[in-house]
Image (tube, rainbow, N blue to C red; front, side, top):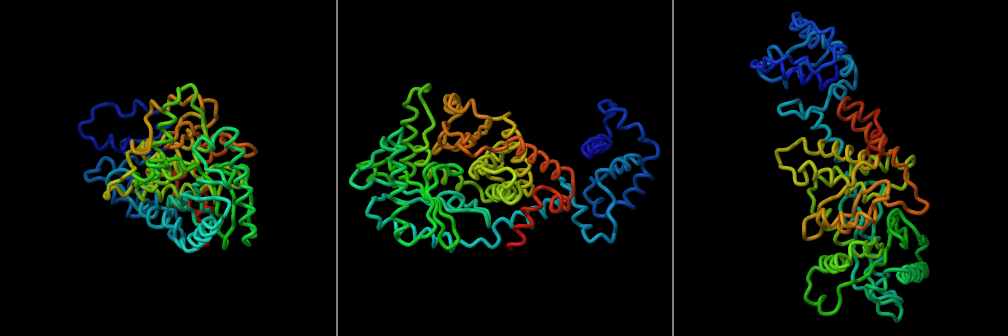
Length: 463
C-alpha cells in the first residue's frame, strides 16, 4: 500500500459518520492481508518498535480507529524502512514530507533552514561589483561608442545568482557607433546582425588594448547572440550591446527608461499584423531591464526556490545535460509558483517553499516533455495577455519545448540554438525522479542519494 493510500484510508477511518465502503476503490491485491479486527494491537506494536514517539504527535486527536491498520505495517515498512537507534543519520532518515495541516513539519523546517540558505551563503557582491565598475569605466571612455546607460541583468541583477556558478550580464545601450547615430531600426534584420557583429569586434578589440587578457567574442551564447565575455578578477561578465529605443522628447519626460523602452518595443510588436510577428533577438536584448524588473519584484522566498532549482541543474546535471538557459529555469519556477498562487506567500505559510519546489519540478517535467507551454503572466505594467501570447504561437509552435519570455511572447527561451542541443527528455526524467524522492523518501535520501545531492555537497563544501 502506498503511503498516500494509507493516509486516505486513515482519514476515512477517522470519519465516524462515514457509512460507505472505504475499500471499494482499492485493488484487492493491495489490501488482501489487512485484518480489520486485530489492527489496534498490531499497529501499536508497529509504532512502538519502528517509529520514533514524535511521529505520534502529528496524529489528529481522537484518531482512535486511525491509530490503525495493523496489517498495513508490512506495507509501511516498504515506504518507511526501520531505522536503527544507533544510526548516526537517524533524525534525517525519520524526516518525511508532510504538507497536511497539523502534520509533522520537521522536513519542511530542515528544507527551509538548512537547504535553501546554502544557495547564497558566502555570496559576496564585492567582486561582481568591482568587475562591473571596471567595465563601466572602460566603455564610458571608449572612443568608438557613445553609451546612454548600462544595465546589470542576468542572475546577478535579478538576485537569483547561484554561488560558484554565475556570471554578470551587462547590457550596454548604445546610441552611437563611430560616426553613426543608431536608431531602433538599425538593430534588426540582416543589417542589425551586421551592426552587432561589427560592434562586438570593435569593442572587444578596444578592451584587449586596455590590457584585459581574457576577452572572448561569443557568436552564440547560452541565450544571446553576439556578446563579449570578459573575465575580470575571476568573474565572468557577458557584455551585450543593445538598442536604445526611447530618445528625443520622450527621454526627457520619462523617469523610467526601462519601462518606456518596453512600452515602445511592445507597442511596435502589437502594431504588426499577427501573421507577420517574428522573434527578434535585438528586441529581446533591449528588454533586459523589463525582465530584471519582473523577477526582482517577486518575493525573496520565490527567488530562493529558483536559486535551488538552478543549483540543482548547474551543480548536478549540467555536465550531462548542457545548454539549458539559466533564465529559463528562473521563469519556469516563477510560473510554477504563480500556478499555485504562491508568488507572494503569506508569512504563516511555512510550507510554501517546498510546495513551490515540487511545483517547479512538475512543470519542468511537463515542459521538457513537450506537454505544456509555460507562460509567466507578468502584471500589465510589463507583461502581456494570454490572447496576445496565442497570437504569436506561430513563431514557436514547432519548437519541442516552449517557455515564453515574460515580456515578449515571440521569444521562446527554450528555442533551439545552433550547436547547443538540449536533451530535454533526460531533463524531464531527472525532474520527475527528484520530485518522487522529495514526496516519498526521507530527507537523508534527498541529501545523500538524489540528483540534488551533488549540488548540496558542492554548496556545503564552498560554505
